[in-house]
Amino acid sequence: MPPKPSTTKAAAKPSSKPAKARQKAAPKQPLPVADRLKRLFTSLCAQIDGGHFANAIKTCDKILRVDPRDPDALQTKLFLLLQTDQYAAALALIGGQGGEADEHAFEKAYSLYRLHREEEATNVLQTLKAKEQEDDRGLLHLEAQLAYRQGAYQTAVDLYNHLLDTAEPGSEEQSDILTNLEAAQKHLDFIDSGFLHALDALPSAVSSSLQTAPPPQQQPASALASVAAASAPTQEHNEDAAKRPKKVRMKRVPKGVVPGVTPPPDPERWLKKSERSTFANRRRRGGGGATQGVVETPGSIAGQGAKGAGGAKGKRKK
Image (cartoon, rainbow, N blue to C red; front, side, top):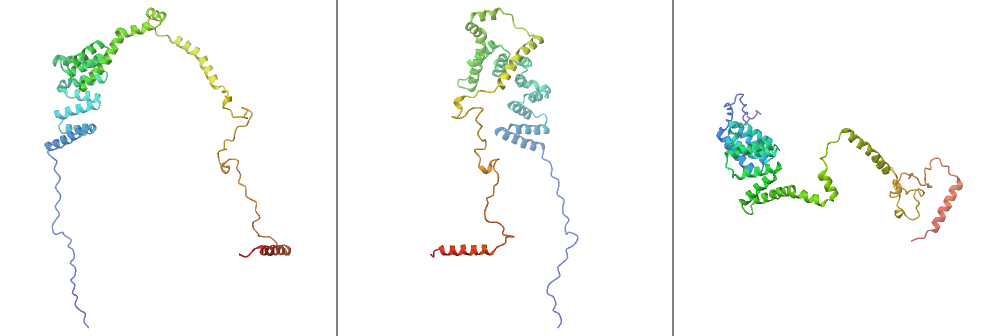
């Protein structure tokens, strides 16, 4: 019988060449500078509103890499550095602005004050007062703080009183002024009359000797060495006293115990016997054991049989 013709068609072989050549993806073009700055400033505002100042400083650096002279980014970064107590970095930023550094003279004076460079801060503040209005509250606050730190307590009190007269009642500024005014007034009162009252409270012999005695002078090294040598025996005596055995209080000794005679209690008395160091593994001696090599005699077998019989007789049926 002839074979039936196949109804299935042969699968078409894939062509080695693609029908259409794949197009290469075009490189992504960078955003324009204006769009990049807009996105960065949007992120900067969100970070500042959320209190993420460290990330906001990094965003300012990104903006300044795109536009190094952007005034908003420079001003914002300076504000953030002052908020995060990075006063040295703030001074470096102000110094790198060249001619625009005069616009941030107050920030420079404040940074110098926080870095304990009072003389430089005072010079910058005096220059700033000559240019600006003398009634500027920020300048008055900074001047009062500098006067307090330099020991000019009367000047600080006068400035704080002036600020207190013009402060808004119940504001946070008024609370800060009252705190600083109280501290400056206490120092001023002690200088004017406080130390005199302290002298009056002392005995007359002590106060007269303090007033007539010359100021103390620095002692030479030989005197210090003699003082150290004199204090050495005292230190040795204290060490000997520390090494001496302490006397036992008889009130704390249990009844029937003689200190130094009665042996001390066993330190392992709270442990189990199996956990103590003196415990030895003792095996019980039993009748059971290996029966290998045992020779049974007829007498022993008969005895065992009689024993078993007697046991059987003694049992009662249930």
